[in-house]
Image (cartoon, rainbow, N blue to C red; front, side):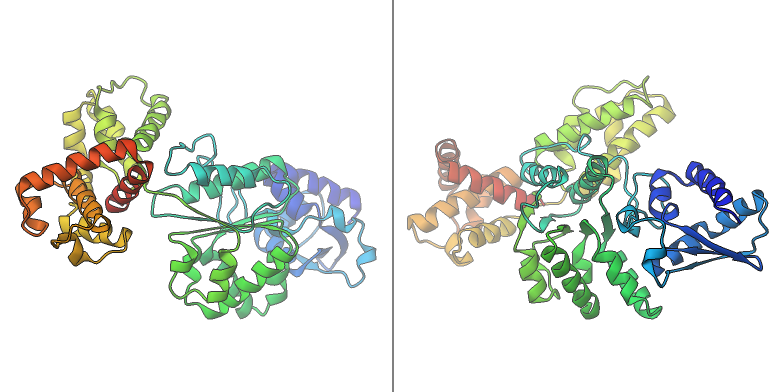
Length: 453
């Protein structure tokens, strides 16, 4: 087989496998020989050879046959003398720029990227503005300013959206960089697979030669000692090379049980950012953006006033549930040919609304407030009138009035048998203070978010 024939095959592969797959997996291949129906190619690493064989081997055989070569099998080998390679090392990208199951050029290794999750589609509000700003800063590339960037928060608050958005932006700005995005479970799976197949050197080479490593849901490696050991060494190797690391989890590093202390310490040495539970304004903004998107598909539907506000108020804990509810509502209205009214929303989404009606209790409020102000629960309901106790007590009363359906007399009884006028005075006082004292206003907001989460 001549180099010209291989050139024709490469040209056809470029059309069918996509630009990124071609640049990262096909272009580095160098034809070596064709003997007894076996075509041999040089590859930079064993990992790349195994990958190309599994994912493109049959396609290469087919195209070689189409170009007049009788090939029954392809083999890939790392050359013993690197100087025999036609391409210089700088021209050979590492395999970290492509992925298992890749369907689109923009997708990265491990977990394919969702094209919906970009910075343009991320709705910014007070609960997530710091996380958004930090993610944008990292996505701009350039010198590493904080390493790692650690994003954490509850389910459906936007961690994965920001991770995907960073990866999309990095690929767009610097396509030559090796960006690896995957979940902690996929990291563990690849590690176990490398151990089983005795290919740990390939594993280490892959993960320690990247420019940006992104690991989602890192809490899943907690308790897995061998995986944590390899993750720790990979982390250190990349930091020592000044390579950017971006991590997400459902809680702060220090709160992940089963995670080694040395890893917790490493994760805390960069910028740790909390995505707070959404507030009403942010949820409404997300719904309004989704409506603009759905209008393209359901252009003839009429959306009555007040529906989005109702959903933003009632579905408060999870953005995914909120978005799913809106999608169901539009689809249902389209199928039955009706206007999207408040009554239709209540009927169509009855199960979601019931599940979202989590009742906040006075006991829960008292416990949260006592923890926040570092006082005993017994003091919240006790008789002492010291300001350091009386003020948190009034705040707890205020939250009980705002977040529960309990009457003033009932709230008073739950606070040590106090009269309803005492509760009324406490609520009024907190309402006045939150307008004058920024610290109290901030405490109230933090407590409310924590209780609604």
